[in-house]
Amino acid sequence: AEVIIVNNEEAAGRIYAQCVADLIRSKPDCVLGLATGSSPLAAYQALAHKVKDDHLDVSHVRGFALDEYAGLDPSHPQSYRSTITRTVVEPLGLTPDLVHVPNGALDTIRTAGHEYDRMIEAEGGVDVQILGIGTDGHIGFNEPGSSLASGTRIKTLTEQTREDNARFFDNDIDQVPTHCITQGIGTIMKARHLILLAFGDSKAEAIAETVEGGVSSFCPASALQLHPHATVIIDEAAASWLR
Ligand code: F6R
Image (cartoon, rainbow, N blue to C red; front, side, top):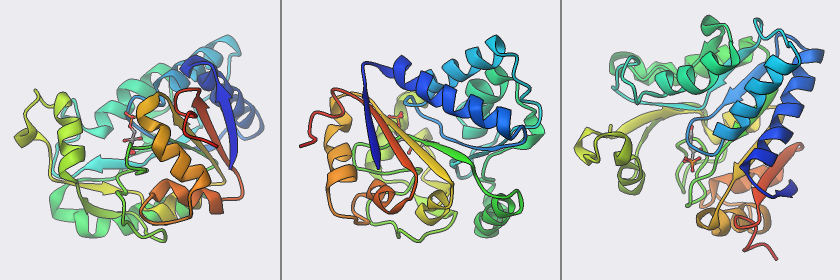
């Protein structure tokens, strides 16, 4: 992977925004892979500004989110559907119907993963996938041990991840869903360009494993080493374990 070390999240966001703006100009109906979490927020903001300043037409841009909680109503404020609407669709002015989030409804979740992968394929695949990384090296909700060839499927959330996310659910872990539906590592690897963003000390060990460790399901993000076009954009703190 190409590693770019930047001063702060805003600088990383500008690199992402420039890359996506160029893509939108050359392919107005491009397909963006979207992530939730804090890492991509500055990138979405930078892109929203660029869309405004450069008068980009984003009405045909399509999107696919990485993951969703299982059994949480899409209208719940903490569902990833709501989060993507709030942080991406609205600020960028995307066409809501063109932006997809995995369907976490319990009655259809066994088949929803396959359908999601088929839909991504039918739309021609993801052009640029933005990624955050967990402190344990997860991407999407693919925790350590996930198959590097996996497709979109239901997964059990680890206790750690549920604790980490309790802050979004009144600090009450019992309100945090126990399962999710997530794009697999194999799904993510099919995107034509991966841009992974990581900031802060807490990500340093995972970034070193990702970039300089062996490729292993114990660090799901290490699969990026096998990708022909992966860009890792990090700040000094997240780079501090690199040799
Ligand atoms: C988000 C996702 C997760 C996060 C990761 C980092 O859709 O799938 O893998 O990217 O947990 O989260 P932040 O950016 O909040 O540190």
